[in-house]
Length: 188
Ligand SMILES: [Fe+2]
Ligand SMILES: [Fe+2]
Image (tube, rainbow, N blue to C red):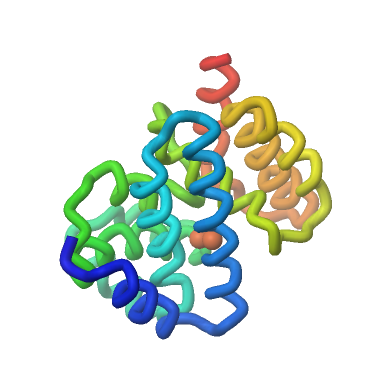
């Protein structure tokens, strides 16, 4: 770990508007709460949460360049730009902020889409992103209720809400989100 937590927070908060930083603070709070509840490492959950949206407000061209120039997942470039910041965030967490822990890096990388075989930390950060206290969207209370008794049920409710929204807006669904949801159902 290259930077102190305080310096890291300073550096990351400077890369986004205040509103998104507030969201990040909420994700930190929820991720630590879920980690403690479900037996993940709260220190890793906190670190992943601090960094999870670090690239969210980067210019699209910069995200694309990082993906192309560093051999990251180019398939993402065929899909919604909203998905790019997770891949780029995971990369810059390591390159620019000295995060070496692959569990933390993976939790950042998969926080939007999930993946088949999500780790405990992946689940904690992804679900925290849905239920942090500042979130207010149709169905968020149902996700919060599910999160009270099961990480997997919470995430299934989260992915269902994402998929339903995309369908209602006639937008393309990222296939991995569907695979992640199916895998969570299979795990139960
Ligand atoms: Fe994100
Ligand atoms: Fe987020």
